[in-house]
Image 1 (cartoon, each protein chain N blue to C red):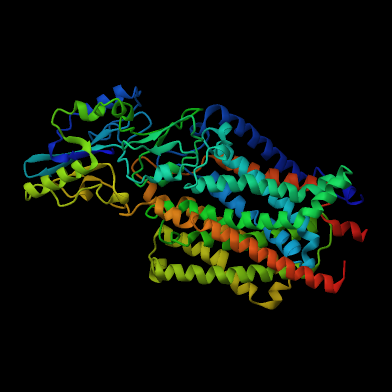
Image 2: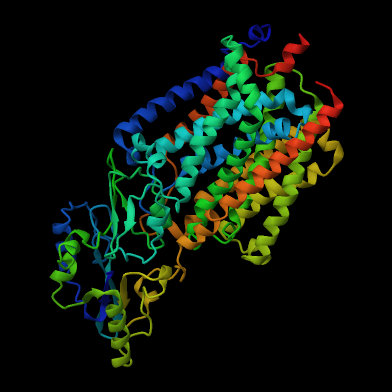
Length: 379
Length: 257
């Protein structure tokens, strides 16, 4: 395994991420001992904050690349994307483990996280979401297991997974479709709390489409980064293909958002100067309009640097959308005399620690597992 | 049979007897509060306080005019909090109360997001926190007693009984006293109807009532999505299987791998 020696584990950046991860672990221990009030600024009018907005809603959307690329390769037989399928699935797996960990820490009684598996309440979106997290994380573990089996020289097990991979991937696609949209459906219960800029009855499906934008952009972003850091060569056709996918999803998303703007608060509301209007504009310009304009130019879709820039815009835009839904969009209704919300430094550090864990975890995997099989073939 | 309560705000004298009785029956502690220039104390419901009286002072001519508003859970007929609870820790009972079972609760606080009246409160300061809110004294109701706050009220501000009788009483009071009440029973339609309802002489919006509440049952909004899930499963699995079959046939004709 030649690539093993090419990746230097302890670069200065990795050391910094590692320290952030340690700080996060210490804060997690403190949270478990002292409770949510000691670590977060959450209160009776703001029951959900940064961890739900970024770590759970954002994290799950970021992980959408796993089901998209797995589906493209194993169901639609698009061979072009085979070199990045393992990386995408592994990333999604990390994303879901992190989102699941974040929700476990965010709930008040973490050791009861298993309750929804046995205490069914099918009218609750939260129950639907919980079941999806459990099933899909298991599915992702199954999908990425061949990498580990290979490392452990368990050829038979790897072969078995290979045999059942198509139904497993299809199951994963199904779970993701439902899970991404369910996270939006969480907010259906709050028609008056969530601003009309975001709330509408078909809101869950918007979450699904924006997750597709985010997922494909993440895959592209990570492919470009790992090309740089892990020195493997990705086919430029893969990146332009992903960019085309992002473009299609963004067009659908843009049209849907316009439709709900006109049928909801109306076009004029965007310029009413309110905090919600400004956040909505920011989210739409950064994450939708500019990427749409740029990606519709063919030369942009063939330029790695330009694609990388658009990836960052889309990722930031969709993350902002999740924050707008979970914090800014409900802020006006939830705020009251004596009640406001801005995260504590501890909430920020724990969020950063999750990102650190994902980066380090992925790096370790690339070093020790065959994440980029194509690299091997070239050596 | 479902119980209900009518709060006739014109009868309340702001003695806070209900607040004390509630605290005693439910064995609630106290929280430190600060003087804010307002008699409402504590300023909001919290995990130790399931009911309080809101004091609204107006200057009309020489004399101050007071309005007293009793706050507590309204025990919706179709409660959003119970519908969103993933583990059925919150539940609408047949008697009318929306009750809470800590042993099931995972602490996700979705109930707090879902409640249009901001009623469920959390024990943020504790390592093992409960969701706390008015229980409608479900323990008293099941043993045939009247809820503590109603029992103790010296002016009979509250009328307690079967839902249909209470609704009839509310309509009768408005009809028999022309000009006394605003023509609005708060809780008749709010959030699809609640088990606790209010009558007032002053428009509810000027008394700090939440008017930003839909007049429809909130759980229906969620169910519209959940009930589509089986169809989505069917579509995704069928579409997936068909596209796999087609692309696989193409691959076999290619004979590449």
